[in-house]
Length: 257
Image 1 (cartoon, rainbow, N blue to C red):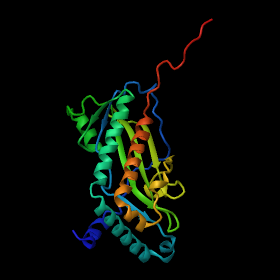
Image 2 (cartoon, helix red, strand yellow):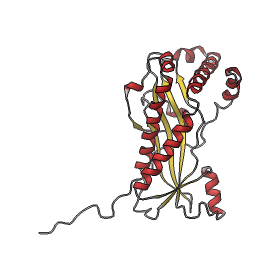
Image 3 (tube, rainbow, N blue to C red):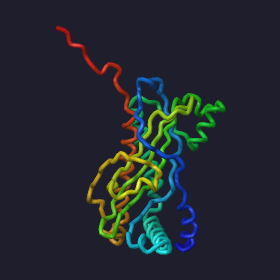
Image 4 (cartoon, rainbow, N blue to C red):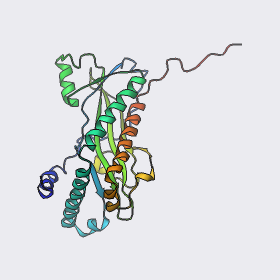
């Protein structure tokens, strides 16, 4: 499909945003939820594309028509990058799931990989579907932004990801752990309002070898730059799983004379 046709197709998806609002993080209380032993991992919710974006304040000042032009130019750049790395999104998500499952298993959980969405899994649990019968909680992961981002023409493109992770019980659909993560992006650059969230936990992975002065330098190193996004996906997976770390039952030792 030519870039012009793909632009028309993709631009229709740009208005899709998440419905839920995250106001504050929820830390997992293992004292209240010691029965959580099996975690189901549904499909990640993504926009199925790598985001290549640079903001320009000049367009915001000019008005809506200029913003529309900026949107079209942004999509053209994204497609050029995607053409150089056509399997990068899939590779990054497969890697992210693998790292997340491995870490959760090390933390003492059993993990069931589910080939269904979060809501399909919740519905399946209520119908007694054997695929989800033993699952105590579902880890719902939603990617809000993933790719290379520059907040102005004077700042470099840097790799990052914004994602939401909610651990919800299957028995009563209670959210027992929740967090919004900004992995890699400068916290001053991103607009949380655009993601409909009120906060983020910022994870800095500022490896400048994956910073690119402008789009031209990014494209000149497009293949190698994929390593930066794969690194971000690994850090994101470790961050999400790490927040579900189990506390030891007896964290203190009694010393006797």
